[in-house]
Length: 251
Image 1 (cartoon, rainbow, N blue to C red):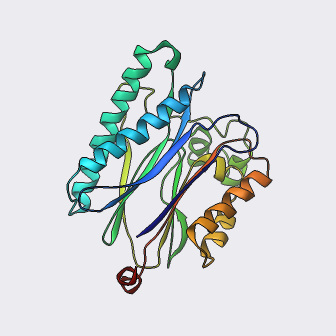
Image 2 (spheres, one colour; image 1 turned 180 degrees about the vertical axis):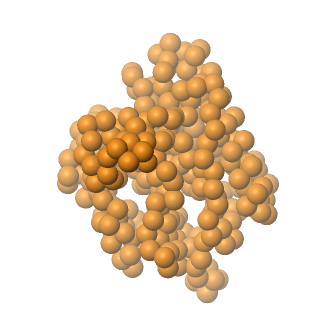
């Protein structure tokens, strides 16, 4: 499995409240994470960085995950534990009161990947069935879409499209969404903050991802496009490519 993490402050904001990375456990298994922080006085930085660091520490100490069931349990328990840590930090530090962060993470193990998320940062997969969003946004506009009040196209331009209904660290207890999907050689995964998806549509992301380019080049293309269209928000992404066994053997 190849992976690339990229983040960019954008063209408007003075600092980056996003965080993320690609980490490995003791068995060499990969975990990729994106966190998009929110909160005044740069507290969003604290929430997202705490979340990423705590996920990294926990994963590096973790043993081998042999099954989707074990992986789902580990991710759910870890994110719940980290939520409590971020919430307690916010309650004990006045400058951090009300801070929170989205999180989307994937653990890739053999021929499956387990996805965990809270908020509106997204996971997409490109496979033989096409390009699809694996996560469901915990956002105000997505709730309107699901209830049939507005269309998905309307949601893209809704004035409250960035209102998140669920975030890590804002409540003492929260349940993350966790699911496992099959992963075949040649498949690609995209994790990203809304700084990307607010500016680049799904069909455009699919077109870029379909190109046979280096992951760094592909990621730079996506970030450049978001910045060309204003870059009002931080832009972060992880790209993963499930290599064929032959290529894995050669590398």
